[in-house]
Length: 238
Image (cartoon, rainbow, N blue to C red; front, side, top):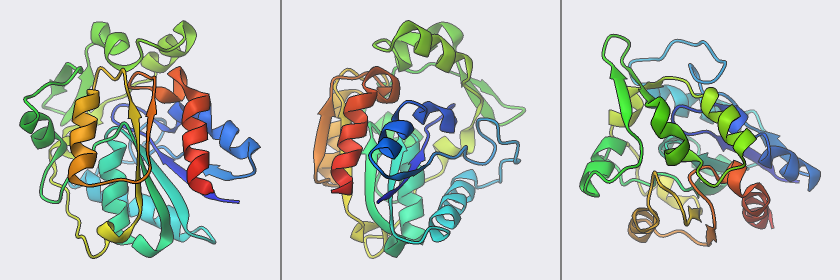
């Protein structure tokens, strides 16, 4: 039995893994898909360094497990799992980047998008007073889930919540001596409108991953290709 910890991306909550989690459990594994502090239904206030807050939270969750875990992150969740690996590399069996941001140390998500030419399918709406951003209502379906079943797309887009800007603007702080020692896998989404396939490939070319899986999916493979995503994650469990 493996323990999977599934970390959601920006504007989402642990709910996004609701199709994939039961598939992993049906194969005999344990699954944890938490809301990060302040996200989903969690009402914890965001810390000034929210990326560190989320990585500390995830590291504590990993320390509570009996054995090393498979830690997967979707989209912005990739930055969270990298920071977490810096904290507890010996407690992570495998990192899995699910059409996720895989960044070098010293770079923020915003900087990564800018370095790629600013090509990004999401049109955020910023609330400076709260230090958060949301996604334009009319942009959500096309950006996140144009290949998803209609019911899943409507339900998931209605559950999006504000994302702290600090999570997107804080540079990653990792070392090859700690983060770099943890095996990495990448799960590509070939039809992603948020992080284009060539963008995904540029990131895992710079920080090599093995294995690499390619799904015929939009940015929400947990709804548009849940069986295929579960199978890719199960392959990491051996």
